[in-house]
Image (cartoon, rainbow, N blue to C red; front, top):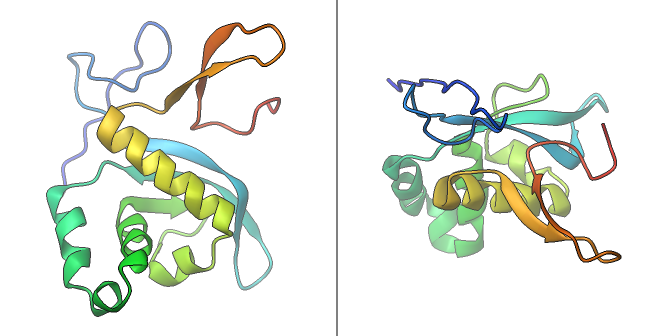
Length: 144
């Protein structure tokens, strides 16, 4: 049984670090392209939870991973993504059907929330060279 305690948003509005109230363990995201289900419906908004040690160990016993180490990310992502759109049963077959750009996005998102503890990326404007942070959990740049 997993226990999840959502933290109150930080004063800056990011809410993606421990504020003393609790540990944030679930992070919303928006896929660049979206998962297309068997009915042709596109699902873009989802939730990924923090990985546990078990999430990283169990896939190593999976025969598909033993035969092809590249499959590790498919199994791992399917364990930590709790929802994509209205799809609540995110299994390896769902992850296999993602566009490559969406899988790459989820792999980077996984790394950010599990290794770095947040979903922000430092970027520099190519025109004016101003540096700022972008929250990758939202949509693409320029979208509201």
